Amino acid sequence: MLAFKSGDARAFSTLVSRHRQPVFNFILRYVGHRQRAEDLLQETWLKVVRSSSEWEPKARFTTWVYTIARNLCVDSARKEAFRATDSLDAPASGEQGAEGPSKGELVADEAVATPDRGAHNARLRPLLERAISSLPSEQREVFLLREYHGIGFKEIAEVTGVNENTVKSRMRYALEGLRKKLGDLGVDGEAMVEASRTVTG
Image (cartoon, rainbow, N blue to C red; front, side, top):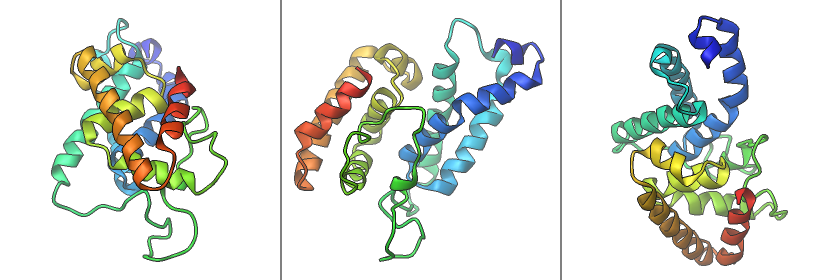
């Protein structure tokens, strides 16, 4: 980022290749709609370019870029509040009742060990995605940043603009909510949630 800020255009390509997929996965899980997620990802990188002069080395680039992405997601959610959006559980083909993988199953998280990677039974992934998407947005974003992207509570507090104790509280409620939802779906919620917590330590 320092190189890009100093005028090295090639450094921007390095930033994008390094962070594009994790940031896209965060946005997609936040908004639950692939086209919207792709649009928001483009907006995120545009904002990185336009705001590069504001970035200071004292802030980690990952914290900064997730803050941008999260704020764009929140703004988008407000605008889309009264419009129906596709669920990650919807068929990837877009046709109701169609066979095949869901949109959530097509989300790649190659660079990050995800909570459901250890679950070999393919039916568990969409159930976990459904449980995560059912969380209130403020709990979901904390859970995703912590468990899917390995960001610490202090940095999550910076990303979300709340204090660290609030972040920890939201995480606790998210874990409780996931246990309950997974239990309602017939999955051992305790085991699944505990497995997810050990992924990033």
